[in-house]
Image (cartoon, rainbow, N blue to C red; front, side, top):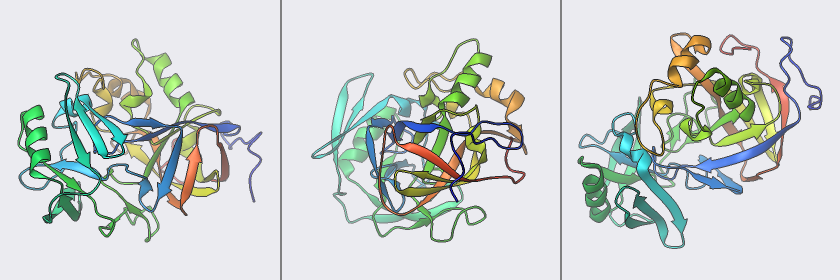
Length: 291
């Protein structure tokens, strides 16, 4: 039964209700700049185009801003021909076709996972290596490459793209507002690279969400997101700072990890849009959650 989201509070008095989607984002090439959307198509492994491309090193291990912060300075635009990719400091750009131009495949590694990737083109490899000053290759995740989410938390039929672990990351605007009140210099939401942002409710209400409906689609909150150093990287300059990680560690530290945002899996295919209501069906009560 749908809980009354107009007055929904948990036992700790955290207000959950009256929630609406205020931001939708995709990151076509893993760890590069995101794209803000008004409407997003939900596919079997997350939003359409989200992290279907990724850079790897000579060992086919994924590359992210953790190793090369300058990835934040690569802007992606979806056009009819593919991905228009621009290195902001120089203005140099390349168009990456939606379909790879090679028949070369390899097992690629993302954290503890391996899955099949298809190399895109020699031209793309040379361009990214030149822009970043480091040898790398661009891979694409074909439709028949299935990377399973962590079975300790997610359903066995849940798959994900080249994202760190799950198809979606949910963060409430109130959570960022609360963090920024604790910081000398506020940070924007793009430091945390969410998929879905919502307004309404108290700070960290997303911690509690187990089952939610957005539009006609069902989502499950499966695991709080353990944060690395990327939120400390200014996405406009690629300069790394101690904040906001230092402040988050004071009040969002659990099991030796800093937690911020809720990872989601989903059921079904369709669309969600800005302004859609986010309705809570069931709350999490287990020990993984803060509130």
